[in-house]
Structures are given as structure tokens and as C-alpha cells.
Image 1 (cartoon, rainbow, N blue to C red):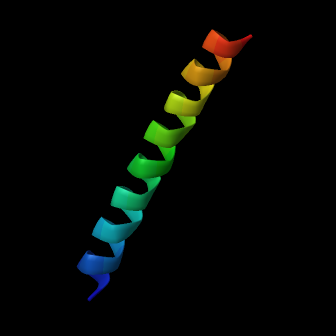
Image 2 (cartoon, rainbow, N blue to C red):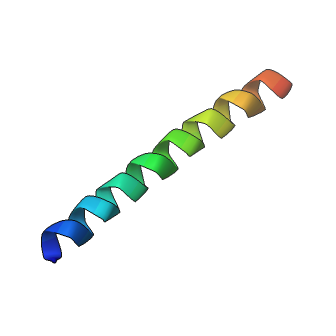
Length: 31
């Protein structure tokens, strides 16, 4: 159970990181 939670947390963190970089790049292109 704990392993699953850790895996999910890591996946979520990675997703947020990718979204942050994507948004940052889009924002840079707009400005």
C-alpha cells in the first residue's frame, strides 16, 4: 500500500513539474 502511494505521489509531482515548465515556456513566448 505504501509503495503505491509513493509511486502515485512521484507521478503527480512529475506531472506538475512538466505542466509548470510547459506553462513557463508558453508564457515566455507570449511576452
